[in-house]
Image (cartoon, rainbow, N blue to C red; front, side, top):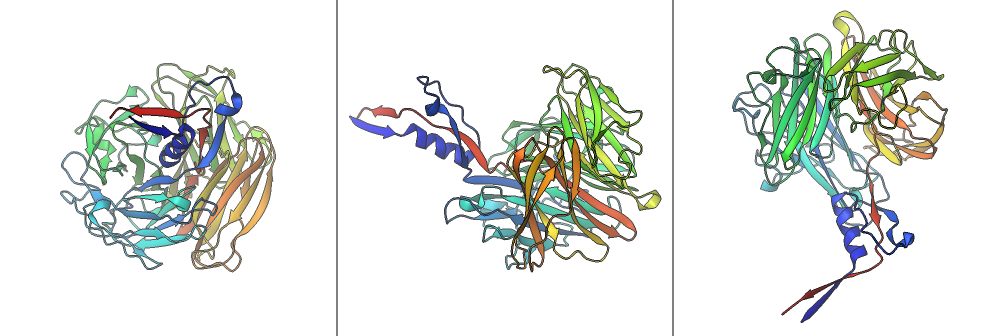
Length: 533
């Protein structure tokens, strides 16, 4: 008889650190110290970046960064081309029928070339972006209309807080402007308020599968009358092959044009990354990131002070109606938008409202909360479509409801020396409940320099527009990390702005917690596994 002794505590720690999934302790003998959770750094992180653009006049930069402090000395962080697998209906992807080959990636400014071969990461393709040192950003760029989606992993000291930004400038045509997307972790469910199938809009949901087995995905659309009837295409049972990306044109999934829709993406099998690229013929466009998980309350941080219009889109999953209070946490305190003090959202239906003159010259964060402060209030997801400029010089960006920053969050691709017509990156830091204190740190630049930090104090019920420090002597682009030091929950976002032929192009990325650690319970006993000979 062979006896194998397995340390349960060590096994659980290893499993949680690799998967990034919190593990629930089994019932013990009542010793609280035995089952108390400890936070351990994750040891492996997976991210996917959607296909940047099919435009011939688009230029894309990818920037990757991991904060210092991860455990171990050996590890890597690489993003490889995903194969292009059409649009899920045999019609090709992104308007190029039948083109299912990935013909090019980017060229790494630090010496790595992403050639791409259409076969995905496991076919020996070279990385498009490859990090070499935690604490220093690396960048890659391309102007190819066939630039692929990217899939990749980081492990060892590169895994905790690994952050990748994809920024694309489209100089003409539908969606012209600045498109920014924070590359995201794969999951099985996503909500996207604020999409559209109306005339003049081309919204694609990009589904990217990072794994070695196929994923099967459903895409559902909900308008003001509930679930939309299917159009020429079907959103059910979309197969996303391994290491591949499938773009789906939303207007093919509805029987008639719908101005404001909420999109629900669910994976029946496997997991995917999902983001929506919205392109408007007149008002530019941007990526729509997934909203935070449905909650009774939603916070949407970082509405610019010069917003010319703000459209709020809210959806209440399920059959229960939601009654909400609408507040703006501005620089001087919370205010109630005139004429929009409250909002009624019918269950299973999308509600949209235009908030005229919302910011009144102050950057702010929109806060939606239950009207009766009930602990059993219906859950909601929300997003705002923000427009800057007027007439033919408009540009649009989207801000979804964002999870709070409980420990640390990072954004990358902040310019150390903004080009003419561009502005420095701005942070919106909001403390909608009670005051808080955060530390803002600029990393070294991708071209050198030294980190710099500053401490910011936030008053309760306010949003502060913060120009982050720049690295000392830095060149290229840099990362900004925000750490909550004390006080209540903090909600944050980053805005990049770049004037483009008189158009105030901009993009906004939310800054939820980076998930660099995972809660792992201690174990009070070992498992003895007996194997008979």
